Amino acid sequence: METQKFPGDGVITGSGTVHGRPIFVFSQDFTVFGGSLSEAHAAKICRLMDRAVAAGAPLIGLNDSGGARIQEGVMSLSGYAEVFQRNVDASGVIPQISLIMGPCAGGAVYSPALTDFTFMMKGTSYMFLTGPDVVQSVTGEKVTQEQLGGAVTHTTKSGVASGMFDNDLEALSAVRELLTYLPSSSRDGYHVLPAAAAGYGEAIPCVDPVDRECPLLDTIVPPSETDPYDIKDVVETIVDEGKLFEIQPDFAKNIVIGFARMGGTSVGIVATQPAVLAGVLDIDASVKAARFVRFCDAFNIPLITLIDVPGFLPGTAQEYGGIIKHGAKLLYAYAEASVPKLAVITRKAYGGAYCVLSSKHLRGDVNLSWPTGQIAVMGSRGAVEIIYHGQEKGEMAKRVEEYDERFNAPFQAARAGYVDDVILPRETRRRLIMELGRLKNKRVVLPVRKHSNLPL
Image (cartoon, rainbow, N blue to C red; front, side, top):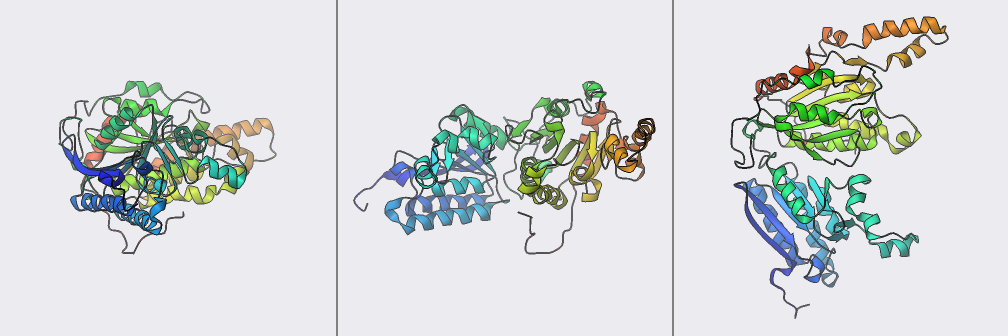
């Protein structure tokens, strides 16, 4: 190896601007030793990461690596560990974004896994700890690269990737768009975030009227509580210009997360999706939303939660998979978040899922409900069957009617102070923007501690 010299040693590092704002970026070159990481290769990336943290600017990694450079032995492994340490140190300090531009194996996948967002391309991006040949030799299982670690696998099954694109240019363009929603670092307050593609970070006027009414929302919730509707229609109706930058759109579709703007201010959207599994919370949805909530909190991005949830998904598969612990992650994320937290109950808010999703009891700042809101332990029929078990059908029907009148409306929660106001759906956009303005200087004093212990 001492006789072989390649300019750059397989990685290009540098800085530049995106929409006028500084960023730091490294790009691995698969044509040089398969993009494998050497001691010098790692040192270049580490120096870049140190500069990004010091400057308080986003870090973008274009990953295309076969893993550790075998010829360098432990020196290559130590280089990976140095990179991982800096990923951890930068977490919650600056946004870290990874693009998988080719096959990444072994240690090359851990650094992207430690970053905030990971994007892949169909047919050209692969991520796996051990390749298909090793898998077959150890387990006897025959699997292709695409099946083992392709973009479809990691965006629909594992949840490792944040998004999937048809080609490199689409992915790079999406990253440029994503950056417009994010602050440069955690030192930036959310009230300085309003931005447009032409003016990164500038406080520009919102072209979408902040007092715009949304009459479509008055009829979007079906009369029957079991009929589905698309929560994305609600989101796109209330946010600026109907633009939602969705994160993990193909994974755990029963919950929707992403970035948007309200009155020009960047916000994080979390919305249960009644069109998929009735919007129920399961393991994947809980982990997906918890990670997103913690990112928004770390970078001072307000959270808006839209709620139509029947509860947590029952069944042995979920219980054996640890739904208790994974659901607690979402609860923990909301309870820990100190950014402005606004919630709107559009229809059902049942059981523990009501508590978990930005409720007043987890210090939600503003909790609103539409007149169609239903806040209770469970649905009326199930509740009545438990409370009045064994009574005649006619009597049961009467009890269901009584339960509906008492609990399947938001007014009891409003009387108790758990709902701040019952609003007309058409007023949702105006009200949320008004409340965001009132919360722009929110400050929370937290107990002094080394760090919290998230239920991992």
